[in-house]
Image 1 (cartoon, rainbow, N blue to C red):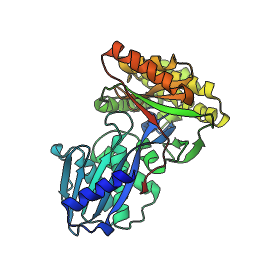
Image 2 (cartoon, one colour; image 1 turned 45 degrees about the horizontal axis):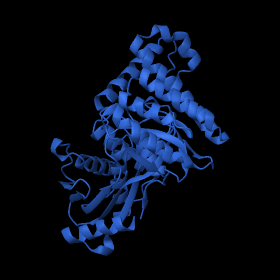
Image 3 (spheres, rainbow, N blue to C red; image 1 turned 45 degrees about the vertical axis):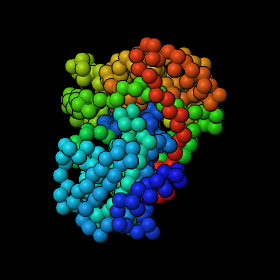
Image 4 (cartoon, helix red, strand yellow; image 1 turned 180 degrees about the vertical axis):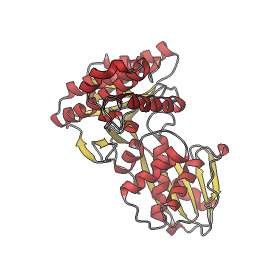
Length: 387
C-alpha cells in the first residue's frame, strides 16, 4: 500500500506544481455481495462486504476551478471545470468525477479545483463495483483536501446519486454504502429502504472468500434497467390486491403465493426472485450469527438458481463456475455476485481447501468455456479512509 501511495505522490509532483505537504491520500474499497442480488433497488435487504481491491487517490488543491485527475492503471486522464459539469461520452470514467463534484456543490459544500492521481485494483466489469470505489474515493478526497465534514450517509448518497442520476445507471445504494461503511472481517446487513445497518462478524472458522471471475466483462446495463422496470410493473399489479405495497420488499412469501397467478409470467418470475431473495438474506444473516455454514451454503445455492432461472441474469459461464466450485469438498457455497450477465461468482471456502478449489477451476473451466478464469483471494476490508 505504501508503495502505491508513494507512486501516486511522485506522479503528482512530476506533473503539477502542487506542494507535497498539501497532498492527501484516500482509499475506497470495492465490494462483493455475499447474498441479496437485485434486492437493493427493490428497497430490500443485502449482505455485502468490502474487499481489499480498491481505488487509491492522491490529490491536492490547485487554486483554480479545474479538476485534473490521471489514472495510472488506465493510463489516461480527465480535466474539467467545476463550472462545466456536463456528461460527455468521450470522458468515460471522468464523468463519475463530474457527478461527484456536481452533487457536492448542489449540497452546498465549498470545493475548488484539485490535481490528483489515482490507481485502482478493482477489476472492471467483475461485479466487484469498481465504479463505487471510484466514486467514493473521489468524494472522500474532496473531503480531505477541503476539510469538509460530510456525514457518512451523506457521502454515500452523493456517490450513489453520481452513479444513478448523473450516469443514469438504475442501481441501488448497496455498492456505495459498503464502500463507505465496510468493516474488516465482517459483512454488513443493510436495509435499503431505511438505510439502517448491522455489522455481522464472519464466524471464526478459518474461512476464505474467493472471487471466481468468468473473464467475461459484465454487460448488464440495459438488462438492469429492464429488470428494474419489470419489478416496478409487478408492484403495480400487486397493489391491486393491497394498496399499501410500495415495493417488492413489502410482499410476503405468503401474499405472493396467494396472488402470483394474477401476474404475467415474466413479472411473476422477477418478483418471485426478489421476494424469496429478501427472505434468504435474512436467513443468511441468522446463519452467520449462529455459525450455521451448512445453511449459508444452501441459501447461496438457492440464490444462484433463482438468479439463473427466475431473474435470468446468469450465463453459461457463471453456471459452470458455480458447478465447478461446489463440487470441491470444503466449499461452503458459491453463487454469482453482482448484476450478472458476466462478471464473477463468490465462493466461501474452508481456508485449507482453497488450493483444491483453485486447482479444480484452473484445470476445468477453460476446457469447458474457452475462457481463462481469473481468481481473486479476497480479504474483507474496512471502508473508505485516509492513508
